Length: 135
Image 1: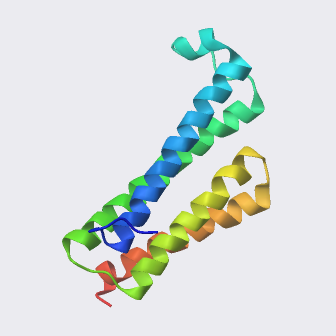
Image 2: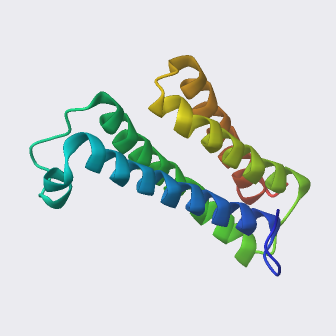
């Protein structure tokens, strides 16, 4: 699904940001349930105790880190008016990798987590390829 007037790559970027927002929302609700509202309202310096809560926090952090690589490339593609079959496929590959990564990390499915992370990185490389090599 794409948004009108956006390139397919920018549409995927919107979906990735929405995935991040949902992940953050789930994390906050989970922290409230497992660690207590007092912890949520605190400075959080005491650290998270629940393993799932810790994994949710790491998932959010990892998604932000990956988005920091993906978003600039997609924005440069848009500014440069570059959209090829491989950049569109790369953007969707990144999103699919992230969609699998988030639950597999939270649910502690380690091999699937690592594989899906790598799939996301491949998607980033696919998007960057024409910018770096002009192909």
